Amino acid sequence: MKRNYPLFVGVVLLASPLLSGAAQSSPASEGEAPAQRELLQPPKMRVASPITDRLAVNIRFFMPSIATDVRYDASDGTPGTPLTGEGTLGLEDQLKQGAIDLQFRMVDRHRIRAQFYKQTRGGDVVLNQQVRFGDDVYIVNDRVVSKMDLRKLDLVYTYSFLRREKIELSAGLGIHLLQAQGTLDAPARFVSENLDVAGPFATLAFDGTWRFTKRFSLNAQVNYLKGHVDTVRGSYKAWNADVQFRLRPNFTLGAGYSATRFYLDSSEPGDAGLFRFDYKGPQAFIRVSL
Image (cartoon, rainbow, N blue to C red; front, side, top):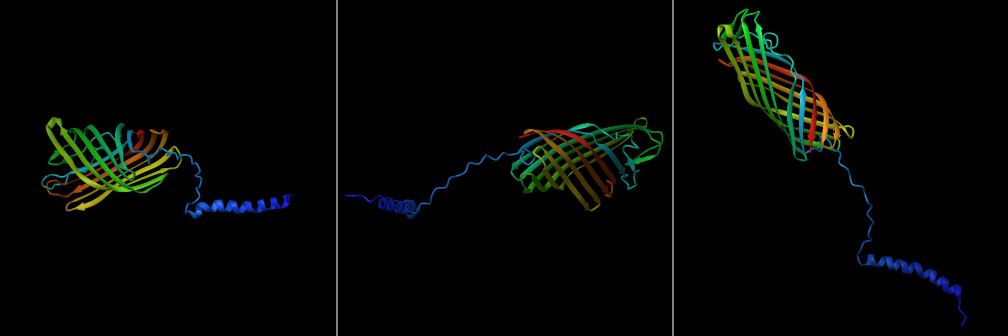
């Protein structure tokens, strides 16, 4: 029997698409979706910055300029003499000192910052004016030896309401413990007076970071309080701004500027006076982080 090869080939070609379509539709008829090939993606690299640090220790070198104004009234209400600590009493108006602060990120958006700061200054001058300080009077040509100590502990909690790969903004509350002690002695006449200001207070806190390159970031912190309770008025303003360079993932170099201002004015009988204290200046630091 003679075979019709052209007809046979045509039938095969027509049947092939039908068989192929049936094979492909078979899994669909059973409710199975065709598997899709997942593309391999490179792992996303985390850029080390203040935004990603879990724990950080800053070791700072600070060079503040200092200005102090004091008035200490007598217990009977007689106004004291307004003094400038650096001009009238000869206290140092510039210091070179170190400081350490710690930053801890509990979870992604919650952070705590802690810092202890201490400042000690002394003066030794011969007065060219009469000075009333508390219940004592220091006369012209008295040799007066003075000392002033400041201790401050800051604990600041912030919540990051905006946190992205390159920017973080947060707000919170700060608790501050402050103690300022001053002494004024006239050794030749055995006259001495002490001033002690101490207490806790709370502030509003704001914090921001902008990582503008892979290694550089701009950072700022602000604390603020202003209030009036009965016979006492006071304010506290502190801010810090710096630029950080991430030399290694866990090691950073930084430089910036910091300023702090206290103001306290009391008309409380027996404990009246004024205390204004400013210190500000440049700083350099190293930062070790995890």
